[in-house]
Length: 146
Image 1 (cartoon, one colour):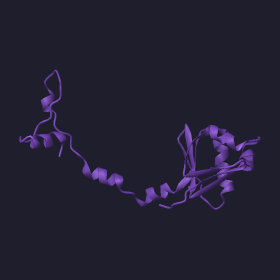
Image 2: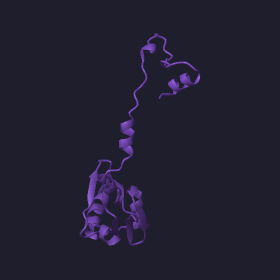
Image 3: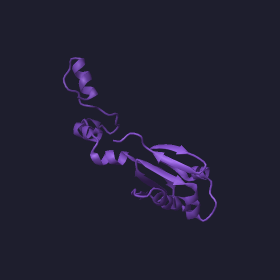
Image 4: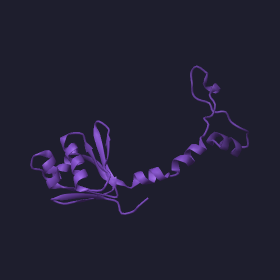
């Protein structure tokens, strides 16, 4: 029930037609918008695919050389895990399930130059999961499973 209809019933009248302030006088032809209750229920329900997606952890980085090195380091430093990469042009999502560890030495090898772990923060737009950072490694993890 819309707010206007509720007010009309509260004040003792019947159904009210919404009126918009319109100089052309065509506002009276506008009807009430239909509410999509089923859509709201569908959006709040979590499917198994969404739950799996919620278990993915890792960095979201600005596209560039460092992001490419992190992708390769993620594959090397996390053996046996599938590394998911979503290239959105301006940024790149790099994820694995439940835990991802990146070592400074591996990133240095992939970049071909010295690298400090705190330099990762410059290109790190966001991340999924929790983060634990040190001088020689960074860990993305998620303690609860969906």
